[in-house]
Image (cartoon, rainbow, N blue to C red; front, side):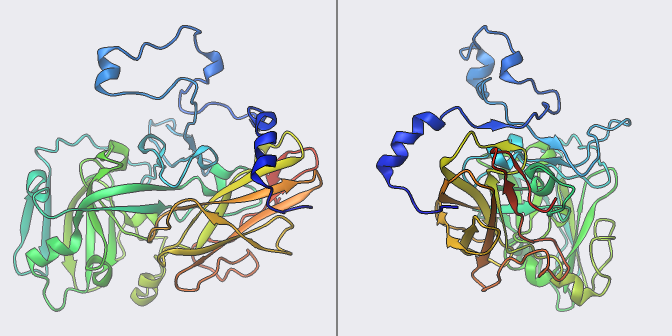
Length: 405
């Protein structure tokens, strides 16, 4: 199978033939969304006061999130569980707020919180116990940083045929807030304060234990996402973002942080982490990891010719330094191109120019981060969070399926 880089003129000649010819497999709309073909032919009026005040996307754009991990959302009791991001339709590294994946703690109900009444308490092994209003938090110096969040349930499996099923529980956004270290320094952490427990306002009182070294490094107490206040499913009005660590630790609807002298097995931590505190602290980190988002399982290629293979790479160990792509199941690897400058602990978009000759192919990507860590195959993986390589098989008829199946 050929993989040479085509010249620009040849690409432009083929562009018209490819436009509009790429299709998704028969995927039903999710969560009450209606595809454009089922909507009225009457054009939307974007001059209404409501759409002038707060816009909406074109009705011809129909990307939607879907329930993942085999749990319906909402279920028979009205609870919403994990809802995945359609990464195969994402453009670039930033996930739109409306499509950002949503993970809940045992089917937690999203609380309705008045930001004017909300408080954040910092207490425990500190010199001064502090309680902040939202207005007071916003008076502190802020940071704005791009970071991914990923659920520990993400991972390759022969049973997960589509990308949203295997990798839909990761998304990336621009977060704005106050560094937790700033608030802890204001409170004065005592010498024996080596861990924190962060707790949110939710019906199951979700809480997570985090090492003080991480708390004083880069955790953000975030109140904004992608340029606007957090959305309710993402923790409005306040959450923590723990760069590079698994998703359940990024406590939403944050209400208090307690400085403690040891690791506590909290409700969120139970079942996710080892009970030994030293091992627990090391088990949080994600990656390095990458996945080809287009083409991926459930998609179809209309015929042989040029394609831009696209994907995302990320690592809890820092900046992605290299992404390689294989079109022959790992026999040969070639460097992909970054789309934008890789950011620390953020999704990095990559692409690879591929001329498909119409024979069966196996597409794979692997990531290397700034620490020199290389994404493993399933056979090479040695436990922990699943960051193994996801292969996609391109059949000679153009259909794309999970290469592990």
